[in-house]
Amino acid sequence: MGVWRIDADVLAGSRFAVSAMIETVGCLASVTGQHRVSPTQREWQREHLPAWRARWAADPFALPFLRDAIRPGWLADFIVRPPLSPSPQFADDLARVAATTDEQARRDILESMDRPLAPVLLEDGLVARTVELLDWTWRHCVRPGWPRLRRVFEADIVARSGRLSTGGWAAVLNGMRPGMRWLGDGRLQINAYDYPPRDVTGSRLLFVPATSGRGWVSWEEPGDVHAIIYPCTGWLAQDPDVVPPDALARLIGPARARILTLLGEPKSTTQLVALTGQTLGSAGGHLRVLRDAGLAARRRAGRSVLYYRTALGDAFFHV
Image (cartoon, rainbow, N blue to C red):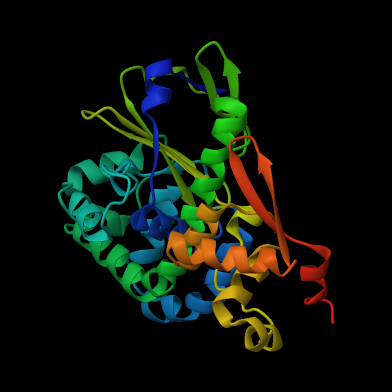
């Protein structure tokens, strides 16, 4: 199994990050059917795959590149470098891809590959075509929904950070992605593959949510940055744009109705801010009104305070 050796300093200095490039690569990984497709990616495919295929299905480069560079269990390093900051800009990450030479890109693709490269990938301009594919997919198929996705990811990060305060790193890391669990004694099982242990002592460690069905890991040397890309799943990935019942919105106002709708699962004020884009003061004010009206209540979970709908609040959704 793949195991990383991690010391306490690495864990203490680890951070969560949100990356548009990683989400774009994850969406491209779902195109050829070689990777597990998550329910969220299936929604993305229904909305954007027809346009993507209209542009790229007949292109001599795109599908051969995706089949070779994003294989089951492997993604070429030059397109999945770990973020350099908690909130990198897509243009900056795209520039990092563009700075790769064609020769290095081919070496990255060929690593662990048991067949020759597709002939089109031997031609000049491999990296330039890759940049074109990534940029088009981002602008036309990922960026339109990015504000919503970003709020989902930020809410996921808030929830996992709260879990850290109540259950420690084991509670955060166990099950973060398929096959991943904390083994103790400074050992983190990354996956079930038969890879030699990897020492990440002294490295910067990032955790990055994505809509990918399984996620992946990446690192950059020199630089000593390691990243674990994990699937944002379950109620943590609840759609922040869920529409409350129209009658409820007219009765108590759309912003307050949206918060009450999201409280179908307990959430902290910080999570609600991430999901709705409201300010902390605004979200807190709406919560006070909902509590005063008996539609919402709160309870403490470790260091966090979680808000949830009461039976009276639930009644508005079952009429």
